Length: 196
Image 1 (tube, rainbow, N blue to C red):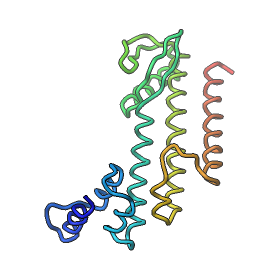
Image 2: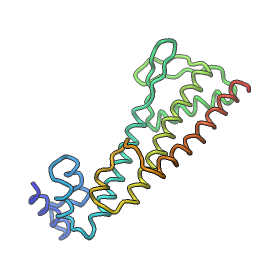
Image 3: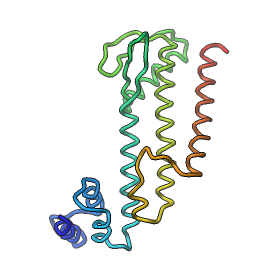
Image 4: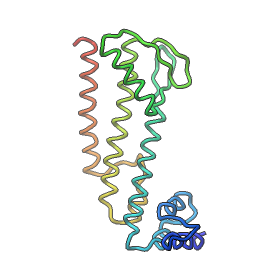
């Protein structure tokens, strides 16, 4: 497999067909077809760090998006309700919350795979806050993980980074500080909605 991929990569450098790019080689690494060392050997050590770094950043961005889109579960009256957080659903939830901000006391909405039901203003606020908390925590973590990857100069260290891993310092403290600010603001929203 390695020699076939090497030939395809060289074809790409020579503008020949069929070919594979460096990103394609990294996909082959992710699929277990070749090792990271094989990819570095094929790409060449001069550009391997940047290529591996770029592929890792793309990988962690995809993982972050997948976690967000998978959504949230909220319990209402002993019933667990799932809310997808695709871009469209995020927009719908933001619009629901806008109704509450403008004084609405209830509004219909259909949870992921559920039936359309009427949610109270406090339920809508819970949905919005849970969604924003997930989005903020994941994007904040993603950005810190990306910064960490950018700081690395070793191919093996870059390749070993996984979405969800514990961040080293100072990245973990920075994430915690930012999430504390976000939580303070979410608490302020709840207090305002409760009339405090």
